[in-house]
Structure formats: C-alpha cells, structure tokens
Image (cartoon, rainbow, N blue to C red; front, side, top):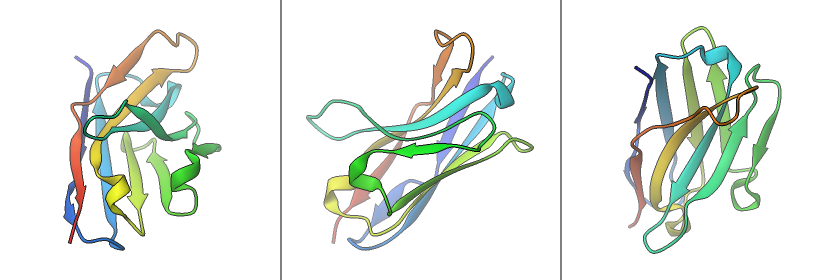
Length: 119
C-alpha cells in the first residue's frame, strides 16, 4: 500500500519559517520524481516545487523562488520543503506528490498538511 504522509504544517507568523516533511512508503522512492502542491481556500491547486528522482534537479513556482527549498533523502524515503519568509499568500493545504519517472500515470498523493500564515 502506497502511503505519503505529510507533517510539519501549522500556524506561523508572517516572515516566519516552516519545514514540511513527507514520509513515503510502499513504492520504490528512487524512481519517483517528487513534488509539493498547495491549494488555498477558493483557489485551484498549484504546483509549488519539484525535485527529480535523483535529487539533481529542482524547479519552483515563481512566487516561491528564493524562499522555498525542496529536498529529498532517498535513503530515508523522505522529501522536504523548507519555507522561509512566509506570507499570508502562502496559506494553503500542502500536498506531497510522487510520480513515476517512466510511467507517469502512476501518481500518488498525500492527504495534505495545513499551513496558515497569520499574525
């Protein structure tokens, strides 16, 4: 059974930082590209950041460049998202997503973790 379990969300003040983690099990982690998506209230789900299966390449949504950093540990089957300089615009549910590097239809989602940026 494939499981992606996010953690690390919570309430943070504007300008603060949070680190999200995603623990992955039930699949061969090293052949899956990993991403973080988010969905804010009343908005569509959007891609925030991605990292290739080998960890050698990352990409970011323009609005988070320079503030967020995605990383992965293939030995521990985890992916992280370090979020700095948070603003209210970053308030959303954040989802961890894994996609097979060959069979892209094999896509797995976590249940999400809430991040709220508010004073």
